[in-house]
Image (cartoon, rainbow, N blue to C red; front, side, top):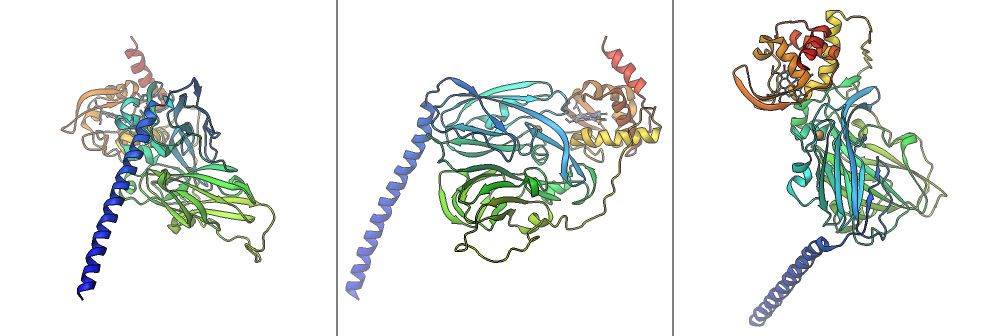
Length: 491
Ligand SMILES: [Cu+2]
């Protein structure tokens, strides 16, 4: 008994010693790591160049052994209508015209001069928060830009890794939900090891007024977004973006690197490739590399770099392994591998048609409701119909789908005393924007409505729709009235 006790004590002392030593080493390593990020501040730059930007699934050329440089990034925000699924349209807000936005490739020590332009046809202000930036708001505080304008800010890349960027304009969740996210890679000194193929994939969740599969232009649904109940969960902005003829490709024996991001806004991704095992995963896009991984977790607003060698031919299926999202909401892509078989690795007869998307859980028949565009003067019902369309693309983003507004931020258009009291004032708000304090239904608002860049007819239709809806006084506005108002103000 006595000797065992003594031994126990010795073991304890040894353990404490070990612990102290490893803590010391850990602290030392931490210091070393911090100082390397710190050191990168002093990397000097050589010359300057414009950054190559690419739309998914492509990535720019590797940085290789190039010196740190002054890197000019020219990024333009574009609001655009595009297809979310077969027969389903959506108004996306994009960085560079794609969802996810353009891929940006830099190296540590680069001095980035970031030019954010907001296309003149856009309706809203936007900005950018890059997770690779050390500084206020990740750049968001310096980049809020109105349609037709440009903002410039500068940052030095201190930490290597794969980072998400996104818009951070209020309502932030809505801007991200509409597609405003992308990836920026900061390569270490000397670059990442060379591979044969590199691709850019980013997951996102989408919230539509209609159900999954409902046809036509679908407006953003704030309620579903707040409840985190997406109708679509997709790779690269739409269902089928990496399916069939759009699949990414590789040849047997090649090494593949996927830069995988997750824009959210809400869901975490369980990224998995059916029929492969990841040889390397750069966890969360940082320095730590794990090996032999089946599924890697990619947080919302996070990323990972996965690498694997493809050994046998076939179609590998990329999924979020929260599996209903893959087969029923769209989070399914394909990597087609061509080349000779290797029976020592895999053999068996191959059946066609497995692992194909199954579509929305609750399918409905296409309604295909088309709005006729006529050149002759519209009747009131036609004006209301056309106005509803514009409202759904432009005004709903702030005033919400039922004109209910958002307390303290966006005033209601439903039963609005401000609106109903003076139609000229309402036309002016849409024509020229509105700032300063206004009181609507007894509540004060002091915010900014940007001018809306619409034609006289569009404004007339939209206001006629608004006046006809949600308990308003049914005033009819014609294009001639808007024109008169526009001219009156240009004196
Ligand atoms: Cu935005």
